[in-house]
Image (cartoon, rainbow, N blue to C red; front, side):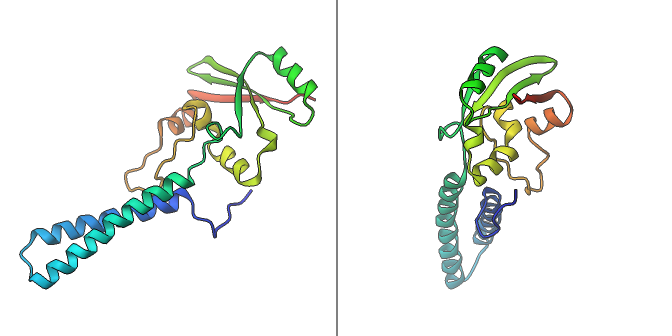
Length: 172
């Protein structure tokens, strides 16, 4: 699955927000210095524009965020193997996978995502990308991965270090 490069992503917005934020900091620092009145007015005008852009970017970021559970495109069904088997046998249109989520050696969740096989391509790509987050946090945890100080989320570290893991089964 590949992402449509014409469509903006949450990461694109994070990048623009960081660039805009850096410019606002530069402008604020410049305005602290003694400047000619005309230059000062130009900088104040640009700062005002940057602040307005920050609000627009924040709104855009929120609009781009997907949460398949909140949007009711997926529903987590906590259950045992027998209940899952009955669901799959009675719903051939939704051959749900059974998941067992383990953390620190203990089982934390068992069940299936109702609707997983009905997701469109975009939502399917999102689910694949944020799969671990849906178990660890219960929702996708959007991170600015390009931030200079980014070092990975707790989820990324837990799954990467082996403390967390998910096994899945399919009914034949």
